Image 1 (cartoon, rainbow, N blue to C red):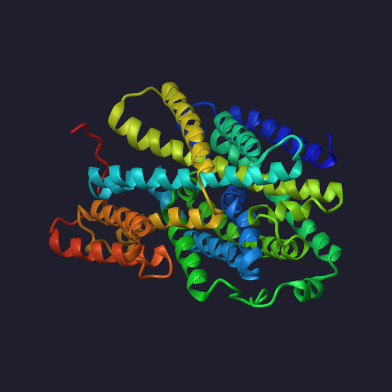
Image 2 (image 1 turned 135 degrees about the vertical axis):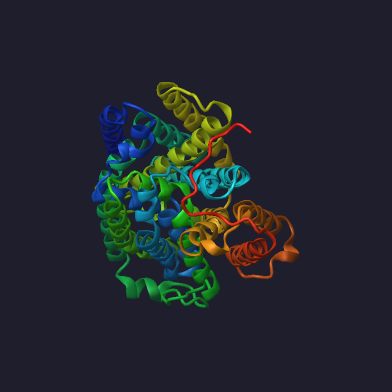
Length: 471
């Protein structure tokens, strides 16, 4: 057994030990399992936010992008950091004070049942797309780590088994406690791996001298273009406010203050990792220019000292674990809370409801693995899915800060317009008049929201209680 593989096995063992401990804290009902009993302190909130952000796209995906576009790929994490900061300042404390569970629940509370239904469909789709990306990166890491045992497909399946199991065991407590360990490992592994990789190739000037001409490899924009980088910031700030992962973390905080401060500290922790991973992508471009871009970072790391490479690869895999667990839990919450409990069995007992959550997580985990087998390009696929949060963020922000513009049908029609716009982007090339889909999403959703504000005369009230009926 190689040293690298032994380190990863040790990390997996630690995760299961933590999850078994977390299982005891998660006992006692769905609030404990899904929201950590709403007892997450600032440290756990920050670890969860960082773990959610620093996943496949923020490590393997950034290196993949840097392999072709330069160090500017690190701005992806800069965008995530900006999103966490905005969430902390504007919304995290509000979510905790509202004592809510999901965006669809809020939509029905202030708008109507149709708004809840269409938003849960959109949000579950987003969660599944992002989760599938974690399996893709997990397969890249394990197949690079031990190619004689893991194929790319085998690595994806192994990653899925571990991700799903940890989530099933301890819910948000598993995610929160595991993320403390994972974030420390990510920092130690990525920083050490980057330093060793750069030194091994003679320093940054030597790497820069060997890169092919034609791209500003170390420029602030590189080969990406300003429109792409601005789109990243637009997407990540948008999704940070209403995607179920951040919302679930905010709602699980012990207080509004812990929620707010946790997201702000998370923003600080997220920022540097992307640029470090981008440097490793550039190093891979020099050392192995013909390697598959998705495998660039794992391959370059395997050329380091066995202990360093094992720790760094375990850190990358830790990034996938931390993100996938929170995403799977969020997807399960959306189905069980906004579909099963709301429309199928509103009188379900607490014990059965926890079982429903676990079964849902298992089923969605298998579905996301299938999606991963059919995905191409980590960042491209992920950003497309996250663009769908535009409608939810627009409605949520207007509910808080401009309720006079909100109408009872605003949530439904704005979300419907956002879904149709994204489908059109995918299947009708003629509508791609913008550089990135997020620009189309904001234009369409904002226009729709304003039209509804004119046509629909039924205003909302900000103290509207949630209405649970079977009509």
